[in-house]
Image (cartoon, rainbow, N blue to C red; front, side):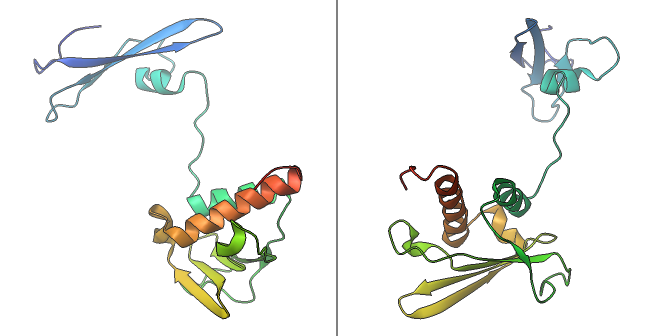
Length: 174
């Protein structure tokens, strides 16, 4: 690997080692932000050198939005009974709007769990309902709320993960 870029700036090198069979690959990035040139070792010509460095022989995994990943994890575990919502998504008008009702658990850490969830699998619009004292609090969030989840979405994720673990291993401590 060269030690300097074609622009004359230094290169920052990285090495990736795969085991079985042992294989080393190298990549260098130019330190000059205006240049940003990437230097890699040549490959056999079948794939790009950058793809070879980053992925090795693995196929790339398609990106799924966070609300879709959460939904797939919960249905994959078989612990939750999602149902089609009675109405289309109010944000995007799509029909892939799903409801989940959670049985209240009155022990910590479940006191902050939502009691009802509605998620649009297309745009990510999410409605959560909580019992706060003796009042029903409903929050409506757009899909963009999943980019930097607030406490309500974190409570939903935590609640579903804990309930999934408990359903599959009843001896699991919460």
